[in-house]
Length: 356
Image 1 (cartoon, rainbow, N blue to C red):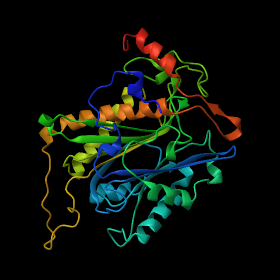
Image 2: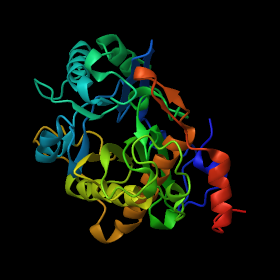
Image 3: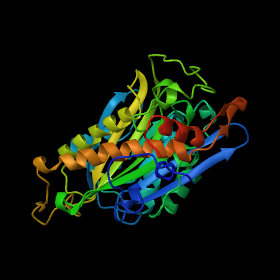
Image 4: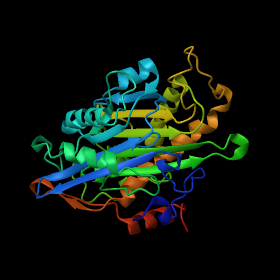
């Protein structure tokens, strides 16, 4: 699997050891990829914030840059400030089955924080390559993702919920990255996982280079012209071990917008760009003590800027990793979406003095 740094793309910030959301200790990710016949090009991605056997809620916050999409459970996350279970990512028409199966899994694991569950499940539409109306995602796929989740290096591109996604009219999908702050700035880590399904070819920008304006062929919708419109969606999940409170995590989630913009997107009416950030710090805080009080650590706002920067840079790289790892795919009705050509990308970076 090829990633952005393998192509020597100049990127800001220092990644963690894995350069993945799994650089957050204890966090695990699971995938189920559904490829069947000519019409199924889809799947499910699951994130367990503290791992599949630790159901302690985490502080969290969300932000919708453009809300033409869905993230179930977001209202309660923002009201209560807690994420109470695993996160699911899938296609638009499979949100319901993923949500319901997560609840069933939580019931079987005695993993409810309250007496009920409002799981977070987010979506992007893979209907160009996948026949969403055939409802290919089934409970067995969701359970497979929930139960197979692990830490360590992660697959990217055509995997899990990102299997059938398209980004800047190239093949898109699942991507991840991380940033590790120096000890003098706290030593905290921010990890990001994206499901990238947005943008038009003309907009694509890599390390400041207008790549999409040069790679105009095989663009399925625009022929490489500037349409001044955009359609598609981006889901970004940001995790950190920094001790942040819910209102601060909403601010972190907003910064994903800037990472998206650094790749060229302007955000469009048809785009569902919805982001969630959570912190694995302060374990047990959701329960409190016998008196209902919890002792918390919280980073002061005047120390948060480096985490903002880490969130922006990791989001940008996660999007690029999704595209660079993705492979050309043929799906519904014989439609083919080409992968971003690595050799031509490198040539353009050299032409613009951004690679050697």
